[in-house]
Amino acid sequence: MSRSPSARDEVPEGIPTALDWVVMCADMATVHAAQRYACIVELWDDAIADARRREEPVAFVERSVRLEVASALRITEHAAGRLMGVGRSAAGITPSNTTDWRVKAKPGGALEWTSPAGRVYLVHPERRIPQFTVDPPGAPPF
Image 1 (spheres, rainbow, N blue to C red):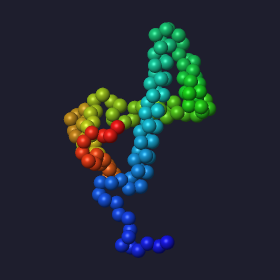
Image 2 (image 1 turned 45 degrees about the vertical axis):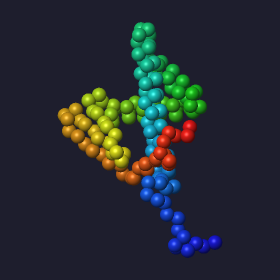
Image 3 (image 1 turned 120 degrees about the vertical axis):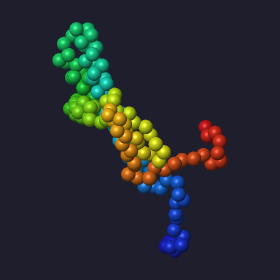
Image 4 (image 1 turned 30 degrees about the horizontal axis):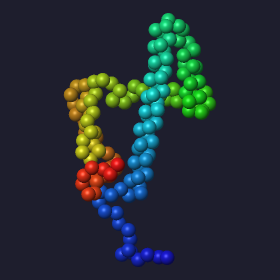
């Protein structure tokens, strides 16, 4: 059944479109992947620190962690090693991982980064970020 051009569905301003949902889901998946890498590196660092506290050799720590990650995620030892390698290499490349950088969220999804030297960088999102409101105003129903 064909539809006339006047009967096109238009999404009101502020209501997320299907594409907005796809982008939000992709962004959330990226954040979750980054958190997974950070957790793997933290597990690895904790295992090394624990071995050093007990004055044991740390030579087998990497394999032990690799096997734990592989078992927990139901992946091969090789894939777990790749996760550990990517996590370790990515652990120090973002400004938020250094204690001297500060970041603040601004309205509209912008991020305000402050460098150790005090310079401020305002980064705007590449896409419009939907704003969700409760209608009617008040407490959520859950």
